Length: 156
Image (cartoon, rainbow, N blue to C red; front, side, top):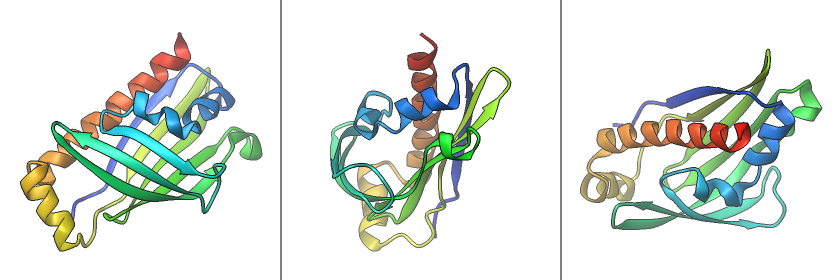
C-alpha cells in the first residue's frame, strides 16, 4: 500500500564544507528542487526546527510541514555531513548525506519509504499527482535535477 524508498547520488568537485554551506541553506532549495516553491524555516536551522514548505506539480500547489531530524556539519565528522527532515502529512524522511571523495564530495539524497499513507495522501496522489508511482518517478527525476543543480552551482 506504500511506496519504496528513493535514492540518487552525485559527486561534486568541491570540499564537503562548501557543499554543506550550499545544502544547509534550506531557503535556497526552491532554486534547486523542481517541486519546492518556498520554505519558511521557523528559527535557526538545527535538529528539532520546523519549517513550512510550499510545493508545486503543474497547477497543483500544496503545503507540507517538516521537522529537521539530523543536522551534522561535515566539520564535526571528518567531512561526513548529514541533513534530514521528516515531512508531514506523508511522514517520510528526506535526507542528504555528504561523504568526502578524492577531489570532492559524494552527495546522496534519499526519501524514505512511504509505508502507510493516510487516505488524504492516497487521494491526493491518485487524483492530483497522477498516481503514486508516477509521482515517485517524477520525484526521482527531481532528485537527480536537484543534485545536478547543486553540482552546477558549486563547480562554477
